[in-house]
Image (cartoon, rainbow, N blue to C red; front, side):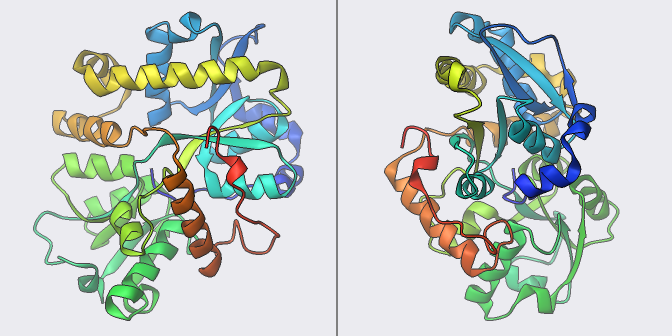
Length: 331
């Protein structure tokens, strides 16, 4: 996944109205005692992991019942978490840090270290970030997205130029940006890891990954940016289930890291257009399986946090958000 994500805080939830949340949440079944409700996009990478947990019986063997709640969007997932309609969702920790600063007792555990990248056609003359000058760059998201801000900072460091001034940026939803580069309407595309993997499977070439961007900005080791987020107060009666959920997730990831048969079972729901696309998605996912959260990752996260504030990242700037290492579960 890319770093970019929809910014939705408590004020956004109140503005949207909690009554509207129900329209965004579709439960698989009624909630049961000892269950844990996890919000997931139906066709995202989290759905593959949750499917594996259930298929392997890892929820039952760890003493809880996994209830997958279909979400219409990442924004809907955030609303569901803050309103209590989901126990756990997946989002980025800068958003969670903002919620924590506003009084939400949220915790974060890494889900994936996979990041997005800039993709070009296999025969593109673009070989370096400097070669983007004068080109049309498709960007999944808006002008305020984290990945775009960080790519601009990297380009300034490498070339002394601001990409916003030397490229023609075209912003849009991730699927739209993918279609733009497929149809030749943009020369390069900055997108989420799943879309970059699909392009790689179709023969496109990675110009630079966001992991390399972060390393180039001095953020090393690159911390997992996306993870499981839950509210300790709202899940106060389910602390054991949350801990066991993370154990089950770790076990499911071990299955996905080693078993090709597990991926073949998931393949029909991955909506792949070719075997090459399937293999690329599998490889990206496996490379992004996190090893937990360490003190070194906390230090890197704090450095990245400071960089985002310096760049004017809108989910952080404008409030009194401060880096709080207590956000990270088990750190």
